[in-house]
Length: 398
Picture (cartoon, rainbow, N blue to C red):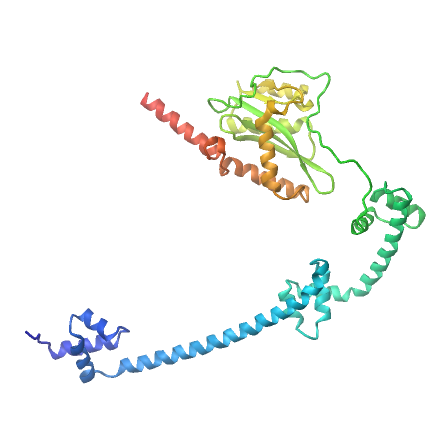
């Protein structure tokens, strides 16, 4: 039987449809009426507002699309210009991508493109380019002076059969001609691929003493413990710095959780370095009384000062065999891991400050976030927390 709808309901239904963005069918479904009925009501009672809204919407869409087209055209012109700049710049980079080469490219193409645009594409600071351009006269003079000095360097280098390095060559030139800084000589020697002969530097961190005090090996390569703060291992490793220097890292590692409880970093390997690392471990644990500390036979570990520190802390010293790295394998493994993960593809740190920052950061992450295979891929801090929780549960249920 056909349903009866009042005039008021029809007007409300038409208003609902015209004030919404729903399709006729969807609006009819929402109202619970026949689509054809709603179509008839809109035709008879509608104001035409829906049509005006639709027209306005289409116009807005057309304007938006036109603006988008213009934006895409601008972007295309920009990308095309960037491509052309990079194509021409490739020829300049045949001998390497250096800052001065980029500046020279901008200088040579100032009439083809705007300086600002070329600097954007080549990742340059426009003010730096103008500063470089202004200093051309001084730079040309310096280039001539460097060329003359390079000839003198080569002459001295050959005179002494390639055995002289930058400092000796600088001294020789200063005596023969005029004073010159050895750093400037080193820079020019590097550009000419000249290097004074020297044997490869070998860094030795374990320096034994003939009068050393020898302690028995209480660990015997068993780097495990049934509880924290029972057995520790430690070592000193060198961290190479660019230019020939070193930083040194002393460590104190808990065999139970592999936690780095103490460490110290300095540009020397004196006794106070390992003393600082052991003091940090004491602060971390609260007390080291009754613990074993295992190390190699380095002079710093056999020194009277360190022995006295261990006695005052209640620590028993242990040492492996002389010249046997396997007797302190856990500490050696830690050192190798640190260098591998921090240096990665590098062979040296650029500066001592960089070394300190990166190594400190890694040592902190080692305890808190770095997962350890021995600990079933838990971090040392997490492993200790789990072990403590398990022990507490066992004590309650016992």
